[in-house]
Image (tube, rainbow, N blue to C red; front, side, top):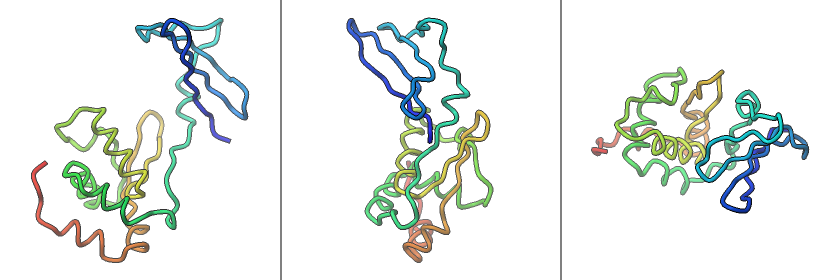
Length: 155
């Protein structure tokens, strides 16, 4: 079973982050209103626990055309897919060189991943990204080729 993070809003704007496994609290931290970490007792959330969380990807048969088309409708996301299609190797999230903020890039990756267009996997402290071309071609033959061969639209 995967680790689960739970954020609880406390009185006065404070927050508590619990990391659970099989319903049991493994670690807990309290954050004040400025979001600086204030350890509760002697427990501290360790990054190793959080990196063990699995990233959700839809199964091949769960990929829906509307979700894929929505994911590919944004010029930045389409450029990410184009760059992934150039190689069979995974790429680190920071290796795309797009002129957008990290939070916006994270949003685009999440949209692509939840639609089933990309697969992401943590390797140490790096999140690697691959295009799910085989799954997309099996579900929607010719779709990805048609979209990627279309003229580029400026982002």
